[in-house]
Length: 562
Image 1 (cartoon, rainbow, N blue to C red):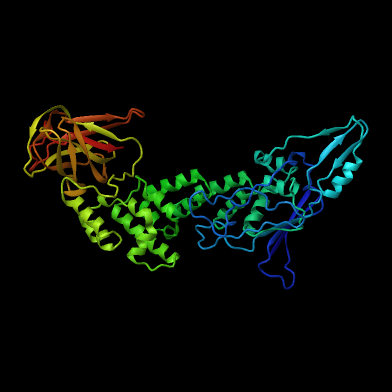
Image 2 (cartoon, helix red, strand yellow):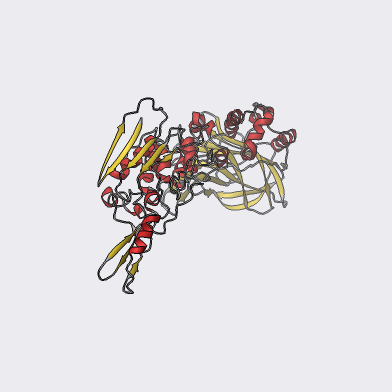
């Protein structure tokens, strides 16, 4: 169907015209303007020096949308330069709809008689005023008609670019050049086209119609199927008010199952606020977002932007599995066999963002170690990291992910430090409860009294009633011989519910250490900004506890988020 928009004097009529016999279904939509000068405006002196922006950066103009963030942001600019029959044609990329906001279509075309749409200069004297047209013949005629009197004055007003962006309603825009600086330059600028038709092959007809409706009636016509192409069109033709409506629509419809698709588009269109909301949604719903169908369609840069975050709420072994699933899809897109070598190749630097040291030795042995994606040297290095102390250096990040926001907090339950505390394989244990929901991310432990030393340690939090281990980490730490405490972190935050009993447990292997005395049964932490109080209550843990109690022992600090 061919869409024609006709302009007669000051009224706009938009209607689908009937397809002529034998006309192809792929016929472009078009915008027809009757011969009314510069779109019904007074001669616009503000565009005398308008320079059309290059369309080289527009999405689709390169043959394929660049998948890197920000590299394919559509640039506002006229579709054509000077010349009687000039036309700028863009070829859309089209391999993947989630990466390509502009689908392949018949496109849209703009046609019009624009011979009177050039910038004018007004020359005035005491007795006469003449108007100079930008067309060659009109210029010559006008020049001949200019009075030779020395009293003549040439009047010029400074051009103002994109005044349409400051007009939010159709009432303010309608008497001006269609509400788009790009259209203004196309039809009224110094390089205005005189072509009877301008094709816009990289613009969806439905999106272009939505743009026209907004420009001429303030009607916002956006749906799930058209919002991305409408956003692209609004950006391309410099209509920020319609851009804002599109972005707001996307924000309201953001869910875990479309977060990755919208993140890709937000990065593509340089919409940082929308991208930030998508990342927050992925942090909170990591498992659901990774399970969504659109996840495997994202580009490598978007994958890396997610994997490098410290706030993902999912175990590392599952993140590895999702990365492998993406690699299989990407290998297929690149027409490669999904061999381990090719999976590693397409993952590239994203593989180094998987935090293998955060896995348990069992998780690593059952999955990544047998995947063939890691080299033999990497596998051996990681197994040594899991099993020996001091732990050798590995090429992968070992910093825990924390799916929490806000400021880290900690409490200390001892008011004095003494020497010496011995270890023989028995765990130090203390029971505790809190008055509000928190997330424990680690403990502070005492170190050696004999100078700098390395310790091997296993930390756990156990649900007292069920004896279930809720979180643990087999790791190590280095101390400097002082009476300070040294941080030992869990692989993942451990949720602690109010009024429920838990056991903090630490099993150390190493020389005698400092220990705490004059312990407190209740310790309260007050948040400086909000005044919120978190109250810990400590109790004796029955059974083997290596002597640790409320009064003295190990596990002096609890590190947590509220």
